[in-house]
Image (tube, rainbow, N blue to C red; front, side, top):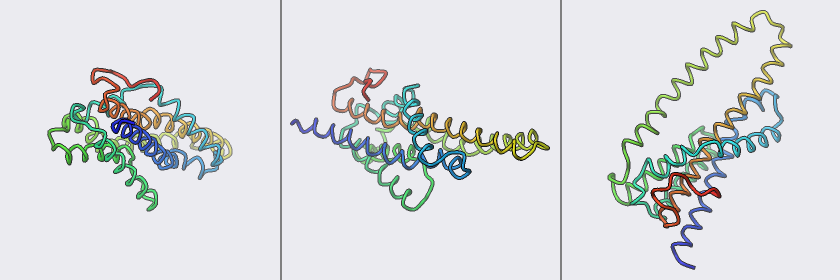
Length: 221
């Protein structure tokens, strides 16, 4: 077997391993409130999250394209570089999981790939404008935007449920928890699942099985 083909297979398997760690790392975040409140049983919650993550992965390819072409120069990418970035992401996922620290698998993966690129060829291999606009700025703004939306939503909920019998509100919130957790899982699929797709796409470009002009990865990815 050709060495580069062997490396490609190793990278794809490692990417799937990262996706696995991403799944058990982030599914808990998506379904924790529904399980803790008793709205869903753990097995049902995990199954629902898995199905919706799969569906979400097919809704768009924009995130996969950004990972493959928008953060690092694909002309300078090698299979060894992609493998190193994946290992970095996996190690961080496992470490934070063992320590019970909430963290972003996405940022771990992107940090691994960008760090591997800088170590391999230097900073000129990183597309800094894309990194800042697509990763750093959204990462900095998202906690504040989410906090604001949550605060407004909480205020509206208290206003609309004032005086409503607790039995009715409990039933409504139970279904609301299931719906919101399902949407989180669907969004996770459209975002995090595609990051691994983008990494495999990047590996295929490095190997030569995909063109740098291709706008989307092969369907099997």
